[in-house]
Length: 499
Image (cartoon, rainbow, N blue to C red):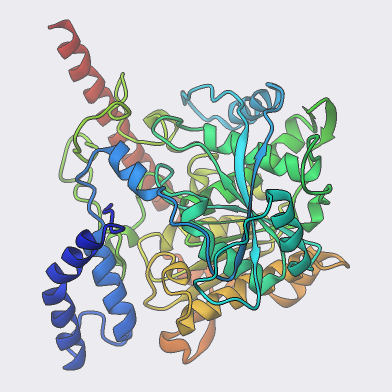
């Protein structure tokens, strides 16, 4: 990741990309672009430029610091910073119990502990221009102003993307403010702990603390209790993963531990109204075909190596620092390789019945690297009877709604997600409303064509060409490859420590 806040660095970044920009415009203009008929010029330029900026050559700590630098608060948004107090260790114990209940092998993980969780209440601020500063008032006063403009009784609990080691609520303020504008709801955007310093299940533990804090506010909270059937879990990319696995955590806890002690009170485990995601990351092994086949439309590169080309998986080589590589080494920033196929890490790997009794779920995906894993998970959810709404946009890259907010597909994305949120929290049976208006009819998704020129229903069975057996084999091979790579790294590290 590059830091472009320095004007000279920004100018340099623009100048070196002028040939790329002209080349893209030229080939698009003479209709020789490789994405002809799939992406308009704006989309193709956006993908080309972002792809060129995604350099992971700096140390992990440098990348992380650059990605979470606060750009400040201005324009049509209210932001009120809060800290959710540290609860009892019971929250960690509940997460551990769910992890153990869902284990299928020898998965290992770190104990995350419980900590105070920072978050930002965010809402749309009307009647101001894009450069208007936020008034110099207390956080409580900002929250009150936010609530005046967020009149809906639902609350969106939002988890930002960033591969679990990058970004922050501050980087997603425009996205979250837009979601608030479209839904009329306040949004609590969570600053969960980042990897590699805090691997799985630290982020999941923080997400559970945030959810329980909405339902049963700790003393001193700005907000009143929010009924679970008025809460939407939402997120993009890794945040979409976190939204989905938090729901799976709650579904599992309802089976194995129906109550939890939280700030001195015994709280029943209740489900949210629904989950709304953009390009959710569902497979941390990157085993599905679209990671390669759709790379032409996406700014996420195809894997540099595969089990067929290298005997051991190797993580991207970056300068060492005090947070990476860890000791003993891992191949994955977020999790031990042994846990890559745990359902609370890669939800694609869980069995369909785990989604029994799930509330409605919304997925917006493009023609991107993560397309297949999202569709595979959607098919599993549908088979379990979960009300699943999928909107797939032809030719669109990863999280297109976030990077092209005011484009026609971006606007259509927010309309779809906001409409789902309103339906899922409807006063009279949100899940029934979603089923009646939006849920996949007989396992169909809504496929939205190039330039929004048409929409059609496509069956999930047709959208996912792989059989269950083929999917399981791909996941198994890629997970084993990464596990072998981790063992080899640890063997090499052990040899070096002897010297």
